Amino acid sequence: MSAAIRLLKPLSYFAEKYGSPEWAFNKLFLLMEKQHNRGQDGAGIGCIKLNMPLGQPYIFRSRDASGSAITNIFSTQQHLLRNLRNQGLIKGADADSYKQHFNFGGEVLMGHLLYGTSGVQYDEGSCHPYMRRTNWTTRTLMLQGDMGITNLEELHQKLISRGQHPVFGTAIQTLLEEVGYYLDEAHTDLYRQLRDQNVDGQEIPNIISSELDLYDIVSKASRDWDGGYCLTGAVGNGDFFCLRDPNGIRHCHYILTDEYLAVASERVPLMSVMEVEAESVQELPAGNMIVVKSDGQISIKEYTTPREFKPCCFEDVYTSRGNDPVIYRERKALGANLTEQIVASLDGNLSKAAITFIPNTAEVSYYGLLEGLRAYRRNKVTQALIDAYKNGTMSEELINELVLRRWPRAEKIAHKDIKLRTFISEESSRKQLAAMVYDLTYGAVNSDEVLVAIDDSIVRGTTLKMSLLRLLARSKARKIVIASSAPQVRYPDCYGIDMSEMGKFIAFQAAITLLKKRGMYTTIISVYEECKRQLTLPPAERTNPVMKIYEPFSEDEITQEVSRMVTPDNCTCAIQVVYQTMDGLHDAIEGACGDWYFSGEYPTPGGYTTVNKAFIKWFESRDNREYKL
Picture 1 (tube, rainbow, N blue to C red):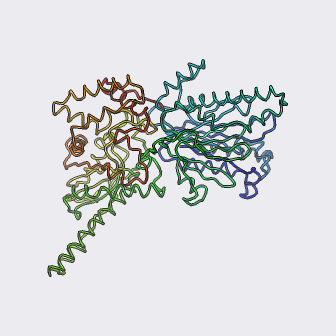
Picture 2: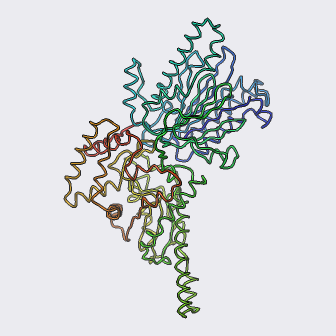
Picture 3: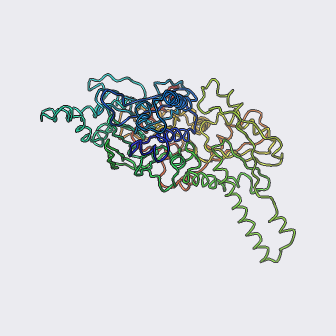
């Protein structure tokens, strides 16, 4: 998750208007904290100060790879600020002394939250922003971003072919090197032109600063990038830029006023922290870049040709904050769109059902499901009363039965009382951790009732079988229905949500099990051979043969097999899984919907490369991941 603030007025303006030159620094902290949604493997902040005197530092960075990274970074800086004030180096709200002595007292501020989902241990070197220093402000570069790049190996070879010596680390390092290369090229060309024109050496930096074309630099650098990304960066002279991938896979929002530009991965943190309404927050179009030059000139235009708009729908379903106005509506609609399937699972008897949600991220969909069930019940009651009136069978008993009968009952059944990230824990400890994350509300469900629990998605099914269903079964319900507000996750992602190991998807396991049960193992072999053939084709010609694994079966058949597979051993009640339909997903998502997890239709060639490699590695029993975030 990224955040950045580029001030468009001097620090003294903010000190006078808001009473403190720390206004932007404090806002950056709040933007990062408001995006602290999904755990935290590390964080980093960066700062560039404009127009610093020669000989004084102008670019700064602080990173931390602990679970309390945001707190550590900002509390350390606040402690340093207090010391500077106690020493008299910073005088009250004086902006000049604040900028001179405080490392993060600059006009360009950037922050990033590392949310790694691979279960590995990250160190400080993995945390953004990344930086390359030179003794030219117009060649110094800082970069951070939310990304999943699918063709890192190809990009590394491109660097090597130039004669460079890249460090094969994270994707952000590779992109930094690529942008830096073209920044150096542009800088060198301008310098030589000015030198050959006998321009005074002390004037050259200012001219280069004004003439650097970041759109051209990024356009050249990004030509071969494949994936989803939202990048924010800054040149040492104060030029700031933010760009979004050509398909708009990763989300990017901004606020632009006459005082500042603020950028964040999510809309709501900008609304809350900058205290504006939703209409003040804009979404950066796909393939576009916003640039603020060192002199404050602002432009927004294409740096590359936009392609089919496919924003990641899993951010809407799962990862983003649920209080975003659009995401809130979408998640409620996802819950409501499960109504017919839930009614069928209850045999139409809503009076014998208790509705709950698990985990907390499914709460908004839960409210939508309740509204859908109550609307269904209301329509049934209305029609029954109309029929009774027409038939002359209206009676007090009938009214009591229809009108006063209990609505679908809402209960809080499971409580998450320990903040453990079971989704990404090491496999060796996952079962033990999952068993202790939730606790049960005892006595809330009767033995003749059905307990319906809505989940935002069912990816692996591991936590369901090993923990949640064992826990929910202790409620003594007659039957447990687990409803996923997302469709069956069938295919790996490579654009930022770490779901790359195909063999761990419960829907995939179910399809493979059904193929084996029905004597169709040759289908698995033929898909394996086709996947290997696909990798001999040019990337743009590759397709997704893994779809053939699912073709012999209906969605209901796979869902039934999933229900069987997640049912714990010796379970005393019936277990039924219900999945969102693809039609229900598209109906709920407002606008374009990147649904490759469920459909297998990827927006970039790298997606098809990933799915073929993932199947091959599963078939050959290899377990390492296909890409690095």
